[in-house]
Length: 99
Image (cartoon, rainbow, N blue to C red; front, side, top):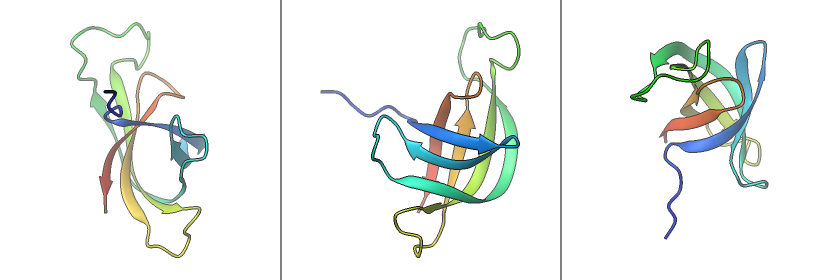
């Protein structure tokens, strides 16, 4: 009946303007990932067809392509993912996962 949100919502801990750790929401015991490297960073325009109520940066999306390693399985090879920060800090999406 209810489908998972696409793209997946994630909680991201970040430091010095870059993501360092993330896990999917709302799962409190979900798999956590540590960011091992930032491959690329860019800004996209929001696909929303209406202006954002945020005065600065609300219609722009900051994106990071990162290498991330599971905390629970540290010997597995890192995964490449794209994290997207929406209207402001604290509103993140996991928009792409390449296995």
